[in-house]
Length: 482
Image 1 (cartoon, rainbow, N blue to C red):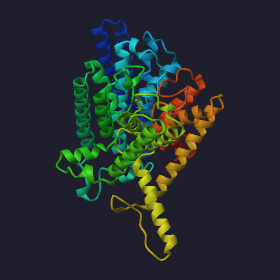
Image 2 (image 1 turned 120 degrees about the horizontal axis):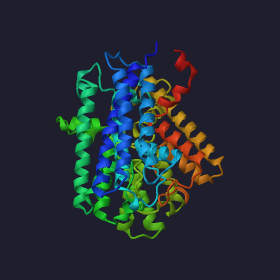
Image 3 (image 1 turned 30 degrees about the vertical axis):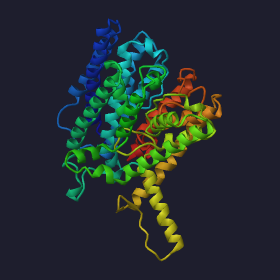
Image 4 (image 1 turned 135 degrees about the horizontal axis):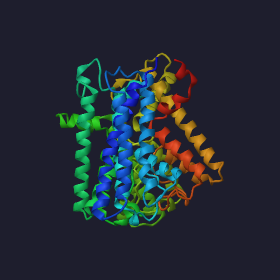
């Protein structure tokens, strides 16, 4: 029998943490003398009341979390945090309606980075900090999910990254909870380090902290309408580029490095593939800017490195309107925005390891076609890939393409042009942030989209962030009958 008790207890715990986090933007508004501190106080009280209520009414011995419960908990957690995270947006001086508030909140907690807000320079500091906090919490949340939940659910090939194995040498730490706790410390440490570097490079302390949180989370919310282009600093561009790359690498490998295995970060095939893709994209964009758009070489490299890495990692920062770089550049950005980073990182998209699995399977199949009697086994990190993993990854590609197509068609049915519909669907389902058209490009926001489009994109963000299966399976009647 399906037992909702552990789910409600976990959701209550999350709401309690979210309520405590609301105190930070409240203090930021108090320090700035902004009356919106009352908004966060009220939101925190409401959230804490419901959170503690769920914890107290469902505490006690908790049964082992089953597969069905884990699927429901994953979806319920993100949806609940997004709903309560929208409260400050509705109650603050911006007075967003529910559609816009939920869009902004969902974009934050899923680390998408699409926004409907304008004139960010005039926004209350509490709201700016709250947007950054939502992305920061979402970033660590997706790492926890990728390490502790998705491998157990065997979602989209994530079973390749189980933290516990019959081979004790494969364990990073004995238990998933310990792994998550240790990675949390690394996550906080990288955020603090990024903030210090940004502050030293010329940002104010507030901007440094806000951008550090959204950089490590590869979220992309900025405190300025012009994003990172506002600062016009090569040093800041370099620092954020480096930390976007760090946020896109598997955090479990950082833990292995801290525990003495520094080679892990440099020998993991997923990391090598990811860095190779990033370097190739930057090189191609640099040449395009230099030769086709006649930009000075160093300026072309600086713009290409920052914006290319930003789109590949799904961060969504920008220093210029790269939607105007020409058709080839837009097409390349469209491709890399769905590729994403490594599994077990804060990034989004399809993920590099799935391309590796498909490549290995295709290579083995070509070998069998050439030599029917030969034995060809697809490998990942020099280990055989189980056939069920290959099937799971192929199913993920199909679901990703299907979800993208449905979302793009839905947006186009509202009268949006082709590029807007396609790029908005891609940026939503891949949790990237900016689109590639004049209406939803890096120099604009999503404020002018019709309300139905915002609801479609909000749903797309949630589906994409939770690796498709965790949401779509809930709509299968057989899931509830079993």
